[in-house]
Image 1 (tube, rainbow, N blue to C red):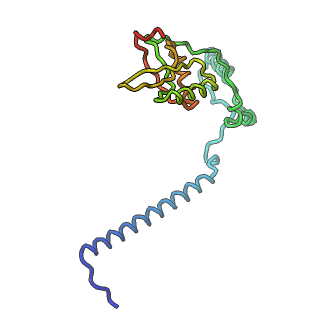
Image 2: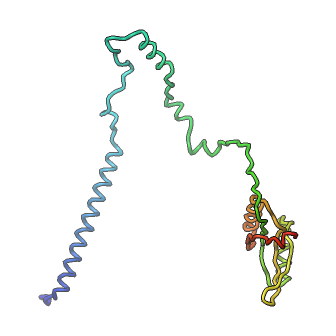
Length: 197
């Protein structure tokens, strides 16, 4: 049974598909060949092609003075001893490094803020919700939080917040601890009029 003749667009499409198959086949063959070559290279011992190391030093020049001989002796005396393979094998990066400790006697310096900040640990529309959250956070050790209320557009909001803090380190540590405790945290600047409490 003979197939019906193809339109030119169908012929172009078939030719494009054949070319794509050829390119994919070539890419697969190239990848397999390079992978095989890499495996073969990994199994080879190239040390036989390297020149052997000799223990003898190069012969000194014909005219050696006493000072140059002394300098050579000093250089060989100062040359560091090379580690033996046994000494190199004694330290394993992944095995030994996690057990090493570095003791540093340093404390981060507190940074005084020009304008104090408050750490807010949540804003609520209902007082009961705010009191529940305050009790939960106090059980977790956040004793400095206070419950405060304010009005905005005729609606009363209840907010958990700290007194004004002027130490950047203290603000950051408290913010991070509150975030880990699951509070919705916000750090705000305290206006000069409200810095009294």
